Image 1 (tube, rainbow, N blue to C red):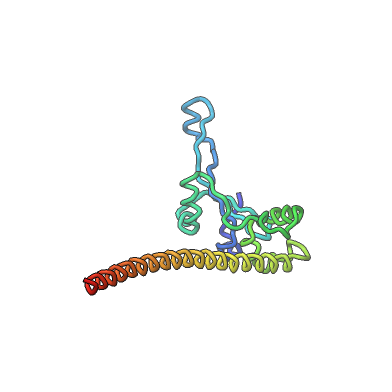
Image 2: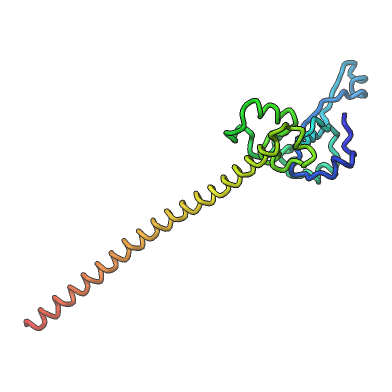
Length: 194
């Protein structure tokens, strides 16, 4: 198993790391000896993928990892398996299947990982790495802007419906008041006519 105490790895931004907790079966020597056959127990492990690098780190989970990657650890505890969070590369129409495979080779599975990749690793992903990162960042920014537009459009539609309801209520109030005023006029005419 790889060692994760390498200062180069620890200093990297955690947000771009691919982190996965999982259970690994190891032979329990004492239980195996007592049972006369192999017995195994599950231990919690962590896998850390560094975007742009072929390095994959596997370590036994300790309290530091539980705290440092608490969000992923909580998800793991709920489901016993968790995925790298972010926008899958398949969601970017300009990334071809072959480019996606190449990126996955370097432990890059999401647009966020690609966009936040350390500069020192960008050249490893190929000649067009920097252009691809710019495209991904622009696409994600456009998607964010588009989501704002969609929310504003939905809010605008909601406000239009509320305005229509208010108009209808006002027309009903005006009609009721007009009927009351017409009735008052009729009463006054009857009173004067009598």
